[in-house]
Image (cartoon, rainbow, N blue to C red; front, side):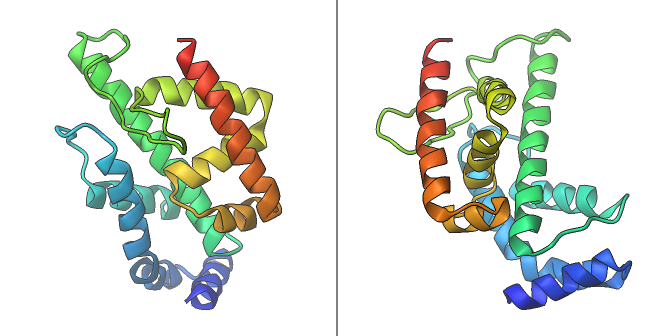
Length: 188
């Protein structure tokens, strides 16, 4: 299936708009699985559903400038970034709505982003996003590894392919990034 996805992505790069329609059935179940995993980590009353999240990701990817994906891992990496942005935008909008138009921390709307390690617990999605942005300013490849692995649902192996780094480097990056995020989130 990977080779078929890669071939379709090549056709999309060449301007074949029908290829995007052929791609969707091949990647839909994986995108839905990733979205469902992200949504299970949200609070129970979340109004955004996995199907809507997948559809919005697909619309953002394929409506506008023609994307230049190299392979399945690259496609999933971009989709994971878009999922993160959509979830953060949704949380921000909800916070603004709840607080009468001003942005404030949401104590009651926790995103259960469970990183590796027994000491990880649910954290506010907006706080996590802020921490990831800070990490990206210091070390973009560390933040990207966390984003791909946790928001995109990519395995460490897929993250290595998507970032063109060795598997051992990605595993090290994830361990280091988790430690950095633990310290950052504990201090706030």
